Image 1 (spheres, helix red, strand yellow):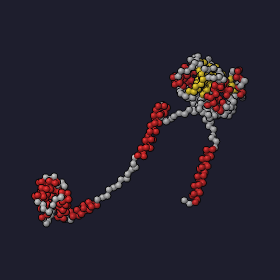
Image 2: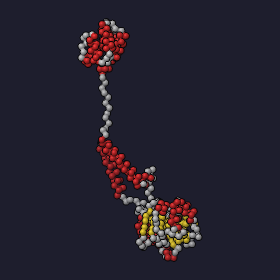
Image 3: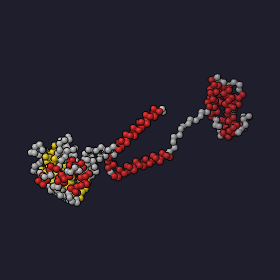
Image 4: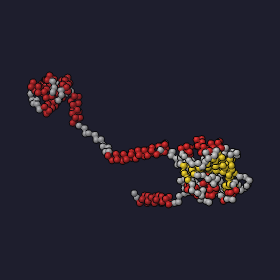
Length: 397
């Protein structure tokens, strides 16, 4: 590598390292996404509210975070009477089963507090409440206020602007619903837009509120926490349940394995199988011998040479030479394998050869007589060669 190439590579490496360092040390950008989960400490998270709710009530009160579907919690759990179920999210859209359990919970004398920009069709159809949301960021300040004289003096203190999507309640059932709060309109004080109502249901109450941003970390630290305290001051519950399931920022497993991963026993069984397979591959891989290269055996050139010579003699019709070589090869095998003297091919020789080779005496005698006959001839035909070859193939050495 020449000097110029080395300098280019060095400059590239320095630039890459500088970029990595800058990315590590630079301030992390603020995440302005809506979350509303109790674990989230980003501006629009729900952490501060879940930590400070006892302070908001100015008393020691039992608080429980609900991380499961409201339907399952209200169906399977034993909850206290006069309790409060708080749901806060950008949108709350209960299905029919969830609403049935929640309405039954309220009907028994408990309270449901729901803060969202919209409440879904099921609640709208059942309780006659509709909302209209401006789904664009407004640039003017939003000032929520209360109709109650007790809180009227504090109305000008509450100001919301950053990250606000204004939503108002446009339709209610006036026989069951009581208006509690509204958005102040400074351009025309006569125009009051509802954002907080109370609906009586059985022995309990529903509260609907359309400014969920008021409960987030950002506004709980901006001096507006008293507004949240006032919202919750209309009830004095014995216990509080905070929903952490119907949240925009809730982590949901979208993998096809979500059912397995949501079941503790199946999840650990799955992890153990994966760990077992990894360990098997690691230890088994060390014990298996690497692939041995296949080495082709060397060819027996002497056999190929013999075949070539035989083909050459056969093509020239030199049958006598071929017969002579076959007889010579056969007698040599007899001498080396059975240790018999082949100088005299008599009857005694035939008996010994038949005995040692475990061959019929008649076949052995026929072969030896044919050999003696062919050795005595000066001229041989192709038929003589075929006859000898057949007898030799039938004889077992």
